[in-house]
Amino acid sequence: MATSSSLPAIDRCIDLYLTAYGRFGDDPFSSASIADYWTSSSESSDANLEQLLSLLVAYGLVERTDDDQYRVRCSPDDDVSRWNERAKLRAETLRRAVTAARDDGRAATESEAEPLEYDGASFASVFVTEGDDVDAVATTVANVFDSSERVAGVVLRSSGDAAGHVQQLADSLCDRADPPGRSGSLEKESSDLVGEHKDDLEFRLFLRTTRA
Image (cartoon, rainbow, N blue to C red; front, side, top):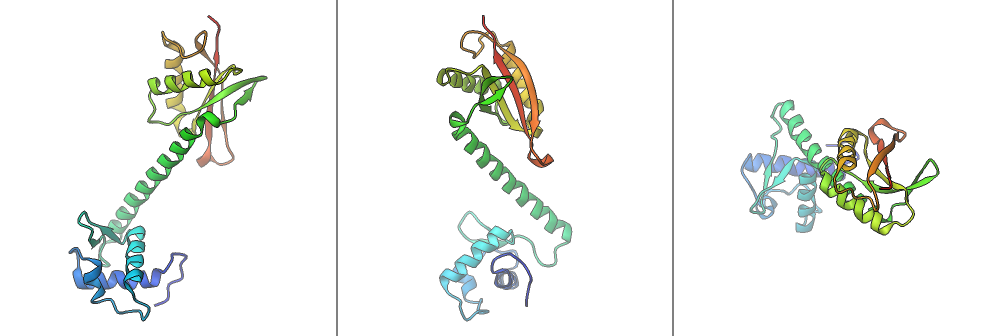
């Protein structure tokens, strides 16, 4: 069998997958138990087998069970809709993980982000996700003001699809009885949507500190 693909070791993975399904069906199996049957390669070894099983898990063809065994996720005879459903669930899981890692990275470097300039003034960056509430953002804004001496305000930054959430947070920040500004409240200054591709846009909402 020759499969034209950029997926690493896909031919050998499919061979191992078919062996697993042929021997165990939907039942769980261990790497030791399948090693007794998988003889398709002269380069077979315990380490090689574990690597291929890990790839099968990554490809979504096999899942790891709670007791550290494996199980085929979809049979070769399953309807294509089931394969698509499984692939969609895996894609959604991966997207959530990637998004969370990106947002964590942004939060970790937030205090180091360069201020953005607007109308001749500097605004400290505060990155916002759809999971942030107004209290969390207010705390971050207050910390930013404590560490930034010469900023005129803050700019709330988020992905483009979170713009509505950011607008609501900004309204709440501006209406707070205990504003996070250093010596006054906040008011909306301007907003912008930047980026070259529609799927990678950043929303920016500038909030200026007003004197009491």
